[in-house]
Image (cartoon, rainbow, N blue to C red; front, side):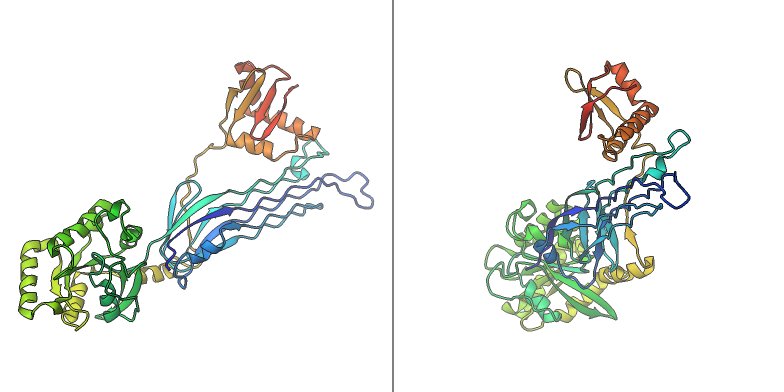
Length: 435
């Protein structure tokens, strides 16, 4: 079974805490602060591995946590960074990150960070000033990013074999490649895409057998709708149409599949197409040739070519290969481009799509949260409180000074705040009585 979807929980490592420490050496009776900083937490990183076929391994283990940063130590010793958690995925994986952005991993070795580790806390040495010479507080490490993310696999194939169920796609793939898909005389034999390769004029081409589509597939009917995404990266479609179908007329069956491609979107209906009239051995040779002429006249230049084939006898397969070679757009194949991508970009290539806005952590909002109760919102302010121990009076004095510098206290007073009112910042809640 092909696992082409996964939902996993990722959690960056928590940063290590800074330490409160003072020099204690011989002949240095009043050594100053020397507490080191905590190490940053590790990241959760997706890594593309060419040898992986699908996302099955992510179904067995759904939680991935990176290592924590270690705490700082005395003598200005900083903690170590936490270990990254590497999660292997196959080429063609599309990931929707925690912030809603999308990234694609196509080449072996390609990487994308999906959950960043939290920052380490500063040791007390960082807070020493001319007026605060012996700070007895340090920062805590921050929690890493965490949450559920979705992954989806889109196969890397140059040619997609499409058509109604039982049109002969699996038989064709088995005949012209070394693939061994299940072949039977009933519809929906193929329950998952199958891949095969053929060599065309010194070019290796990857073919994908897409499970049969039925009317309404783009809206979720049948089995094929689950795999329409695998067609998105194809550069050419080979559309199999039975010359004498057991159900319906060939022309209607063809239009049904074309309609589903158009309804699904992603420009699938604009891909080059070769029409293969399959199971041509069921009609006389003259009839098969006449059908090819009729389809060419009816479709005209909307398709690259029309051929009559039989996977059972081999009739028309050489002609189909030539038609595929002529219709495939020039350039590297999808698989080759993916293999060469990592080499072209160098070792350690990472997919990164991050937006940095100046001052995005500096803003804050003050709002009333009830009688004598006020809430301050703002990522930077909330991180500031998360880093400090509110039970430590020195830490509280430091926080008060920072709030005054940033302008939070002035904004609270303008809003009607009175000394002794409750203040809520993030998960912290306390009576606030600024000096």
